[in-house]
Image 1: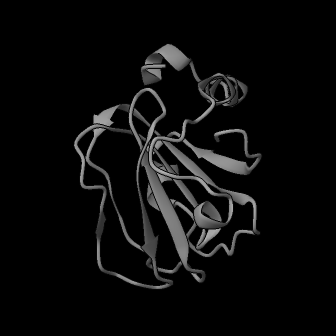
Image 2: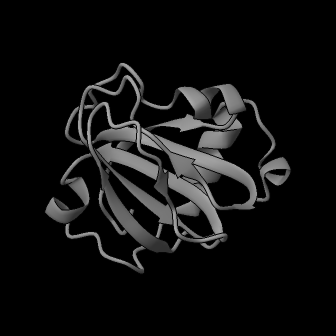
Image 3: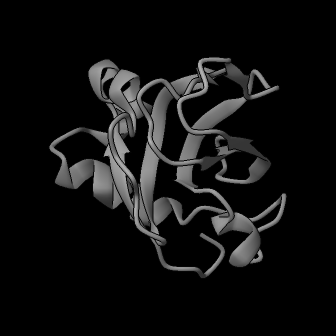
Length: 128
């Protein structure tokens, strides 16, 4: 992400997306990347998630639209604020600030495509 290295689990299936990081306390440079087959307006909550997280929303070109802090165990819904979200990235709270990642930063889509292939999915089926 904009030249910063991180490790992220990749959530492709609906089951993986609904589970997210529930029950997980990610380490400093570890998170979860949600990939949507089309542009959507995703909403997230923190049920059963024991650590505060940042969530970043990206458009289809991998450009960062917005980062929101989500509090541990909060059952209030966090809305992306956009109908044009293709990717969402959850990281430990404060990671984006500490890494100096700002609006407009770009995901490395080549790496995303390779991660999708490694999982046995066709990137074209996910609009990549």
